[in-house]
View 1 (cartoon, rainbow, N blue to C red):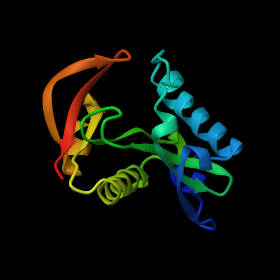
View 2: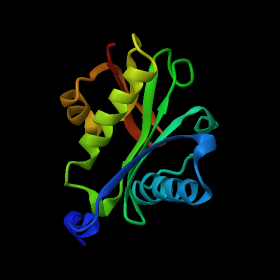
View 3: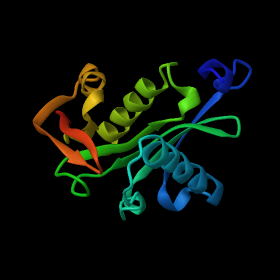
Length: 159
């Protein structure tokens, strides 16, 4: 099914930004399922997704009807990096190619800047997505490294 078919034209996209305690069981299940579907199965990366940071994160979900089309978590300074962070950035395979990833990251940047003003944003970007993140204003730092069997590079967006 194409991205247009999955997203449809007769249904609205709904964005939700929730603290961990605000997530319902269905929302939590959907976001964990999407993360596993893409990061573990599709990317064949065996890693411990439940890293103890979800409880400190603000979760940004993009729903299309009953389906979770995209997701990311926003983390305050001091949890993953000295700066704030966005991570677990994922778009459902059937929703790709429609600009949803760019909108998701744009919203994550805007949220972090409002929530933690004067603070930069640091990410651990998959190396093949460096150009995408650079187009959003992130600057590569340091060398490429392996994280969960996938080449990554730290990237930062100044305050």
